[in-house]
Length: 246
Image (cartoon, rainbow, N blue to C red; front, side):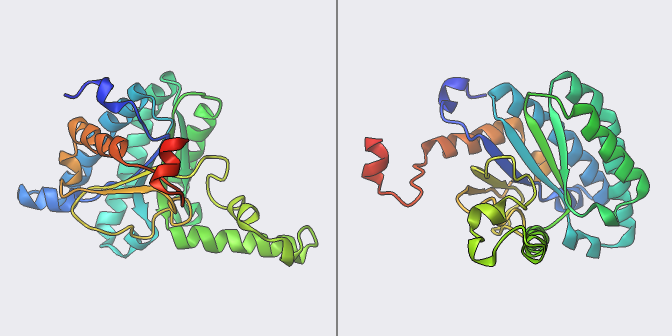
């Protein structure tokens, strides 16, 4: 395993699309549910490594709004798995001072899952360590549309003039508006797309795609991705020379 001296430049906020559970299970002639269970165990190791390295925020895409189109049996299994995983992990996360948050449309989740989510957030709300943010029934377009509704309501209520709407006003209505934007966007599983995940907040994120399926995306693979991030030059519209000078 690479040592920490190779990771002197770390992203503050990492987002991961955990893709490939089903294909991994198929390769092993197992059910897709077997792959999802393996993927949940791998997440535990990635969260632990992120905290040990000093990454401040980890956002993971657990279930998208579009994933509701999957077979009902698989969706139901995943909802049950989320409940079990949160209940199993929350005490350890709390002891490690990790704040747990959920983003997404909760109105479509079961009452039991909503209660588990609210309990986990309440328990860890004051923790000052790493933030673990779980996107559940989430989509970037939903996030933007919901923010637009909130801004429109403020305009209609006289709190804000339409001419005064700018990026800052709009961003303030998005999910996790109190957290910095994503620095590093990782997707496992070989697909080369963002898939409607944190569209606004990843506007300047460095993108990293790997063919490794999520259950095989080990701590070593995570560090490999972070090494590539450290080697990139983030310019934000400036020239390379300007970055070096600063």
